[in-house]
Image (cartoon, rainbow, N blue to C red; front, side):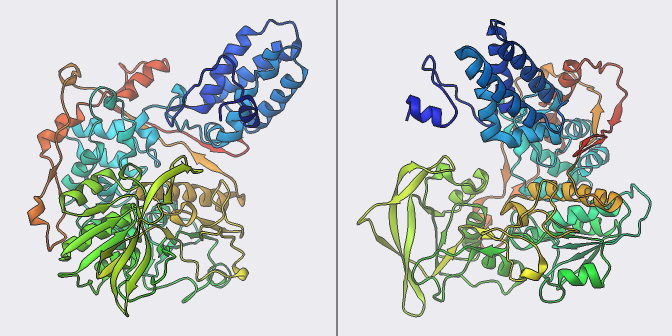
Length: 631
């Protein structure tokens, strides 16, 4: 409701009757700075709290936006805001701190990112954002530099740049949702640069050249155990091995790779491709022990007390499917999504020839399951989702692929009962309509009374989400987990047990490969700091970046268009798991690279740094930021 009492309860006021709409591209710290700048200029200066207090608050906000924030700044702003509100004489001073207080209240994490990590999540604060694409990448991969190097045909150098932050170039070149492209400034002109396809081409181009990760530091004695060989676990293992630590990875499955290996179908990520990257990490000295499960073959006590590991990282992923919670779900013919995809990867492969299959869900697992069922010869494939298509969390390209392959969609529909007599024969569906908004900002689906219909199926695949499997967990482990099974960690990714850390889907819930890679980088920095100092605290290491000379004129590429994607025809996909997406040729890739607007060079100018004198390629390294201050 837009009335005085409702807005006051949120800490806001309505003055002239205007509303400012902010989205994820709005930096809330910068927004608070903007409002404070206005009120500070408007202050008449009669009372000290308003005249001096707003100036002090503005100076602190400007420092945070410029990357000069310090631990304690948030608490200082809160204290100063309360003083200004309480002691100012007029309404201007009394309400001036409201934007600061409410942005801290609702978006404190953005303040903490600016101060602790020197990162602006929205990509607005110039001093902290060299290029929006890199800023949007969870692992902060140096996109402008590797794209510029690919444009010049310098593929090994481009790969070197990428692997500094993400070792899974081949995998992410195929399955990454490309957060970088969603923030690419080129999209403001026409379409974003095809960064993911460029990544894949440079990696595939160098397939014949095995990569041995360089060791960056001298060997150390302290051993580290990592439980789980998904992208978070393997990334952490690589980074620690590069710093000289002996690392052993324990994997419950018979193959390494986690959900990359058993949760992503081969038509998206071929297993041979993934294995190449796992072998790269093993060449760094990482040992991987397969068929070795936490809780069955060893315990945390075994690792820390018997086997002498000085730190343990839990990266067990989220492999447990959520239940539908409807009658008949236990009936034969109900085949949960993660198990379905795992059986396709490991065997025995389900026989769906001539079967009628329905998948419930709207995420990546649901879409992967329904497209896999079609490839396995299902006569009918249906996808049932309780919200609208616009609300589907699955990658849009994958949803479009399912459409091309003939999947029948049932939006605003949810199952209410599984029907059968010892075997699934049908599922009862209830139509939904969108009601009030929920806490996530989406309208909540509400069942429509009397709208029940029946869909005849032989196999029902629930894929409504996953949780970590914590069957191994007990009170003696001293590891706190939440209701969904995710691990309770602090900002440094430390658990409630000394010496034990966690990363990836075990802390985030189901996320993307690149999110897990970012967590792997982060937890490795934390663990290395812990082993060196004995302290458990946030260590935010700002990645180094390249400055690559601009060797061609951008003007001819102002009107250049992004090429259309290349895929194998739909008719050739049935009955096999051949990779769907095809590579562009070298000329197309290099021409696409030249559509990049080189935001990194504009940033140099904005920061007052001349790039004309920059050599052909210059590596700029940056220091870690510790919890108690700047190193």
